[in-house]
Length: 309
Image (cartoon, rainbow, N blue to C red; front, side, top):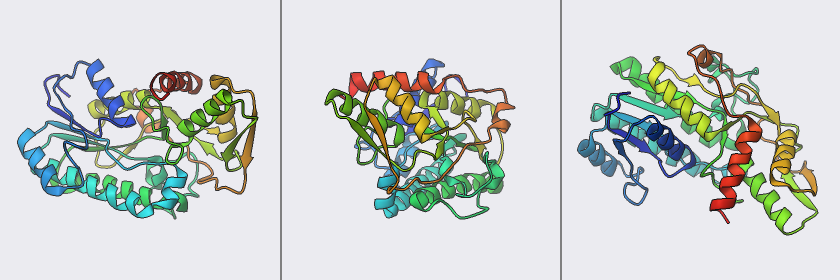
């Protein structure tokens, strides 16, 4: 990407989009186009088309999406499927019509089959059934990735799909009804600490594994992919290491300073047992993760204390 490129970050107020904005500004990219949901509703096709026709960005980062934790996905499969497909269609199709030079699409590791061999290689996509608890969201992301691949093959576009693992960090969603695992655990343990509660309940057995990537690490990887990766299909980005939910919970407990008991409720679903990405293809391009789990969790908790209370 060139310094004077006009860059549109879709979803810049979310955790992923705001991290990409920080990374772009850090690298001297200041010609950014940023629109809030109130200014541009990405589910309204004509509005999106008008925006692209007027702004004509050179580069697009598609980080806008409806996201949520396991409970939200189970309760709202229609919106997780349909809202995301509509957003993706409107942005990708309008970007093509406006001759956008490069588009970077942010996927999710939940696209892989629930019983796929670990670590997850890019070629495992569509080789088996998906995890039922977030199937709607996963299907929408697969549609977006395949759309980018098909545009590249049919029209010679430069649409890059990057596949991060579970993300957490600055600007995360800490609403306990919809939050992902890290934000949910941080808030639960902080409240338990403040209220002197003897126990924190955690969904599932604690034996399931998750690869966790600090969002600013992800943003750095995404910009690196934008500058160094070319290919019709997507590429995994991540840390290549996973932890059990029990290990994660104990690390968060240490960071927060909560001294009570952790109760793992086995009546609640675990979700996919394990999903660690094979990031060898991306590492071979010259990028490696820089932020450890404990460091990332500490930065996230500091942000939570300063912004969510």
